[in-house]
Image (tube, rainbow, N blue to C red):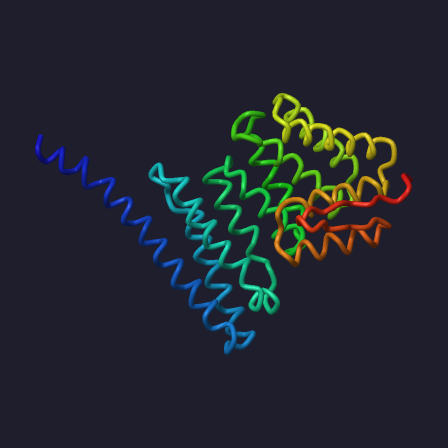
Length: 262
């Protein structure tokens, strides 16, 4: 009995130690890459990116021992370091972005914040919208209108990727309809706003798949997602190229001036 009790206590501790060990391996290696960014050659940076990819593949295969959320959180922190390192990303690109989310969303498909980062990093910066959409579609199989809270945003992100980066207005229309349907089930102001704007965007797309008005409205979604400065600049540039205008109030609120409806 005493031996069994010790095993019951020891096994979770060993498992935690193993997973924590993986984390401790991951963070120093990624930090090393960040610290050496100024002096490292492109060849060295690319070699270290390949090494990081190998570690991600390893994390993708290790058993979770019921610590899926912990692993997802750990890898998401790694991703934030990776994505936020502008100097290195300018040299090597963002090709690892979907690899992080393969792990994150496989371990925790209800990790809502991850879907927004997936859309920006993989569709916008890594230029892999197909991967982002495929990951979102897979994750949506584990979601429902109420689990997690505000899960309708995942349909919105998917619609944005389909319209702006694949030019697939029909698929985007369906995604915005789903976002509207899920959001309409809730009576709070935010959910009702998402339901109304998503429905209007879907209607624009049904009448005119090439609608500049709908494209501007979709870039406005990107702009309103508390994005980094690079994404904000890109969204404003795209809106202006479509004939719209962005005015930022002293309170920091972005107002979109639309051209005449097409």
